[in-house]
Image 1 (cartoon, rainbow, N blue to C red):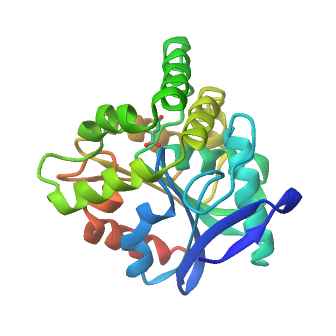
Image 2: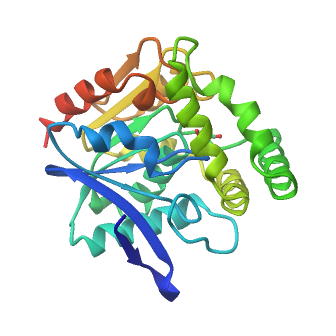
Length: 261
Ligand code: MLT
């Protein structure tokens, strides 16, 4: 897997496939770039898919402290620079969507368009922040097993094939507790991004699974309503991981979206 070196030599790994407009795809919590396996194996026509591992996940090295959305966005911006890309369409699933919005806030000129997948613009409330801290403490003390058991039933629609379910579970179980805890604490500090979406003027595609219980279709509609001209697509028979549950429908949407660039 290709790797760049960030500050202090920290390894940051990514995969890329396909050709066309650069499409940075940012993974959710607690996954890795491998959650974009279908998009890497069969890239949507018109896009060069670039999928990094956030700090501590997959093959990227950890950095101490909470992994804030800004910190992860900074890593992704450094990758664009290392690849000599002036801009990219920036997409993210769930936590990856929070990072995509952080990136658009930090360096709007780098963002040609947004793909917001099973994510939300709102920040955590106090109860949500407390849950993030409880997750962080639990995974450090007991490993990621408890988190995986509690998240798995909400991630995938009932009809998802066992082989996909098995891959999702294995990917989560592989992630380092320190990275998972740091990302959980980082998500708790994220800001509300409704203002950012209201001023974003690039092409925007919002995708959500019809059965997404973590970031439900109402959250997707809220984001799409904020961005002028945004396209909202609800994928049937999918929950929170639409790109893994319904890769063919997901690919069709991306291929249509690619024609805008
Ligand atoms: C994710 O899939 O990245 C997480 O469910 C996001 C979250 O917990 O807010």
